[in-house]
Length: 161
Image (cartoon, rainbow, N blue to C red):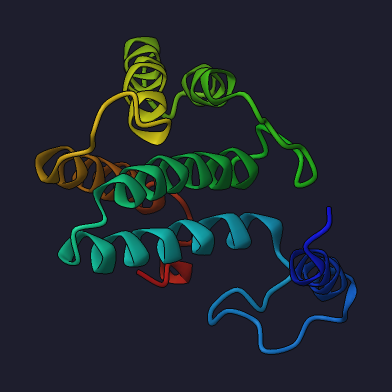
């Protein structure tokens, strides 16, 4: 690339990930993989709430989907259904795994996967425009799933919502 400021910015970003962590995000300065997933979900829900008020509907929808996934990942680790180092990158597979271990039923997992497949992709890639009502509904869904799965765990006191 010929634009030296872009190249410099890329190099600075790369270096930032190589440095020892300092000034880390509040609540995430822990080593426990399950709690990191839980608290990431909490932070995503909090961010979505702030952004909803400012009209950032696409970001709220995206954050809500990711918060749901982090919450499911938390419970899978918490319930010893997956190892701490296991990452399920397929959205559909993650939702299915939650159903397999009884976090919810197969129908709910299928509906989540279809919601993600049909709607998250369309709003993210701007094949359709996100609306306030969609953002509110996704934020509500993410919060309900989060509270349900956290309340069913042995560590609801670790939630920072």
